[in-house]
Image (cartoon, helix red, strand yellow):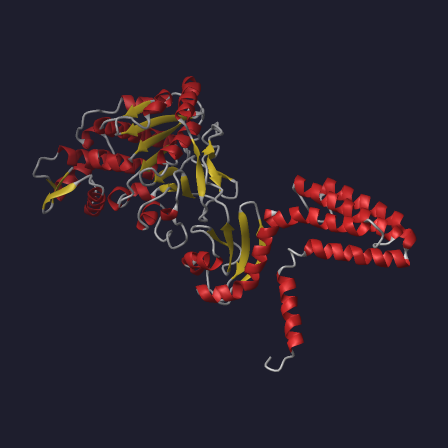
Length: 559
């Protein structure tokens, strides 16, 4: 106030300073409190020193044993609390009996305050808690500066890597507004870039959790502990989230997509999945690696088939469709809805490394892959596709991408690639895969993983691959008799679908592949497939988007 006395101003300033640094001054305040308590007890209750001593021992035992009454869990902190209690209580008992001014009690008190205050002042969690308290106190001003005025911090907790706070937003604000201002929040808090995480509160649309990481918990590689799955029904552990919880993803009756740029760690995540699938007793593994088998050949002892050329890849996927047809017919006769994998009737998982290469060099195989993607889940024929080139040409436009219910997104070069791998709108929702700064870091979108939480995949070395492949090579199941018979009786030469009894999808593919350079008309395709004109047009557009077919001239098409 303009006319406020200088003394009042000075007292207020001192009071604000004492309150601001109350944590740092705590040992000194405790020392002064002990001295005052000793003086009062010595003058009024000099004979109470045995009671003080007994209470001191009891509290010290509780502090060392259970962390009571402060709720301490860490062993070193319990030892510190018990030691401080014994020293403070012992001094107070002596001061009660002899007086706080009796030599050498004053000197002992000063030495104890300094000696026991050093661990207190140096303690990382205490200093972090002080910083958090100051952030909470200053948040209204910070919120106005970053465009989140009206929001407030409800509570905050310090953990091993930093701290997290529960925030209540102003009516009309949502977690999307907070995500859009993450970089501004980092600037206002003075943190390192990429230190702030924001998660939606699933119980309230107007609340969220903000986490600030002072130290990156994923700065170093995490060794692979080995396979944990024994059947396809067991979830697969891909890595560890930043809060030390495991990334568990189910793959039974689910197609999976792993996307990321070069050197993002895609091969590492793929090896983790293959290592777990190799240990499963109810899975037959097929592989497609059009880079000469560079990625999948080390797993060859556990792969029933490995295709390394476009022709082999096309035949492999055509055989997978034949397996689908046979299992679907059997399910229809038995009136069953799903194929339950067992060691005698195993699931079939097809691993495709670098799907973009398959789309470029073997376009005739793409419709087969899409057919597996559309129909394979209920019949336990699953796809696991990986790509280092998440372009629109490779990822979009077909049925395969839309059927992928498990998606792992590693580092990408461009922001728009996040939506290509995960789904539209994921970038705006906080799935910032373009900011991942180390190989193996990823986001996962699957059942039970709908929040943008960063994780790091396990590090699988070449020795791990060799040991795992050799260990489980003799335990791999064989394809069931029904599926193997469907492959053996499938005609390997392309022939008319009306003669071979193929489904319309395969009939269309066969007709396009056999077409001359002039192509086939829509009427000819209708005759070959016995399907309506609208179905023909829809499938041609889907094939054209994935380079599976092209329009030679107006109204004429070929593969």
